[in-house]
Each structure stands twice: as structure tokens, then as C-alpha cells.
Amino acid sequence: MATALETNILEAQPREAGNKNDARRVRRDGKIPGVVYGAGKDSQSVAVDPRQVMRILHSESGHNTIFDLTLNGGERTKAMIVDWQYEPIKGKLLHIDLQRIAMDKALRVSVPIFLKGEAEGVKTQGGILEQILREVEIECLPADIPSHIDADVSHLVFGTVLRVSDLPRSGKLKFLTDANQPVAHVTSVKEEVVATPEAAAAEAAAAPAEPEVIKKGKQETEEEGAEAVAEKPEKAEKKEKK
Image 1 (cartoon, rainbow, N blue to C red):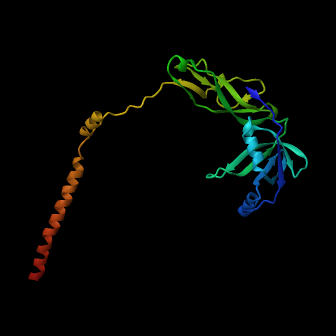
Image 2 (cartoon, helix red, strand yellow; image 1 turned 90 degrees about the vertical axis):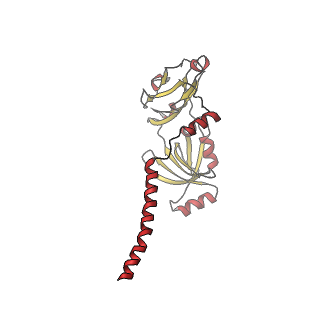
């Protein structure tokens, strides 16, 4: 289990909250719009440098990184990134939500799970290792947030499952995810069966013929059409008699 309190700095400039045109203007100036809230203070609309945000998101602790947030070069406050939005095509940052952090109050965060070691079932039984759960939700003080949690899978064989209850933990962390939730297991390799030309031909020959109901429906439709044609001369003949 790795822990790290990073001291990155994110500089923000206050801005007036407005409509989409105002947000586009911020982006044209090379910034991205955002909002800061939490710690019992009013929310504040801000503009931040997307390069600084990406540096934080790509750090070891990612979005769980705690950094110093400065507003217009003024007083610093501890903060975290709690939400962000990307442009779907070009992948550029569009918006970010920041939360002020009180270092003496516990937070709920999701932390990635890293699998460590080679599973015995992969090494000696020919299986493959499947990771079912990739993040676990925990509660702890900001300074104790781990960048990730290491899970040893070397003992896993067919029929055994690594669960949340098996993850390493300390008294500083409270796990909120269900303790019985599976994290990883060893499963068999599924082979894809490719049909041979002979098998494909046999399958085609064994395919059921067109349902009788459909054939019957076609025949009835044709007969009804023929009757309709036959009725027309009779009606014409009656009109001539009248």
C-alpha cells in the first residue's frame, strides 16, 4: 500500500459565472472554466490552466492528489479535483470541479487496486488472471489517502477468489466497499471454435426449411388475388344486364 501527500500548486483566477459563451471565451484565452466549493465557504467560479490540471491528473495519486490552490495569487488552501469533463472528440479538458479540503476531516475517495505477483493458477494450471474490481472506496484523513492499493495474487488458483476483505489495510483506512466483493480470480482460457467448410455445409443442410405457415400464407394471398380477378368480369356482366 503506497501513501503520498503531494504538494502541487494550482493557480486559479476568479471569474464571473455566466453562460456557455463566457465559458468559450475562457477556453479561447487558453484556460478552462471551473468551480471551487467546500469547507463551509461559498462556491467560486474560476479559470485554471489546463496544463497544471493535467499534470495533477497524470501524477501517481491522480485525482486523489491534494494540492495547494491559490486564488488570484492570494491565500493558499488545500484542495482536490472531484470532477472533470473532456471534449469527446479531441479529448481536451472542458470543465473542472475543485473541492476545498480540511486536513483534519475524513474523506471518502475511490482508490485503484494494483495486482501484484504471478498467480499460481496461471503459472501451473494454464489459467488466466481476471481482475473484476479495479477500484475500492475508502474513508480516511486527506494525508492518509493512498495513491493505490497493492493486492498480492500469487496464491490464486482455480476455485479461489481474492476479495476486498483480503486487501491489505491499516488502522488509518476504513474500507467502504462490500468486504465480500470479488477483486480477482483465475479463470480458464476460452478457445474459439472455428467451423470447417464441411461443418458449415452440414449446418446449412440441417437448417430448417421455410415454415409451412409462411408458404400457406403466400398461397392464400395468390388464390385471393385470382378470385378477385375472376370476380371483376361477373360484376361487369351484371351492370350490362341492368
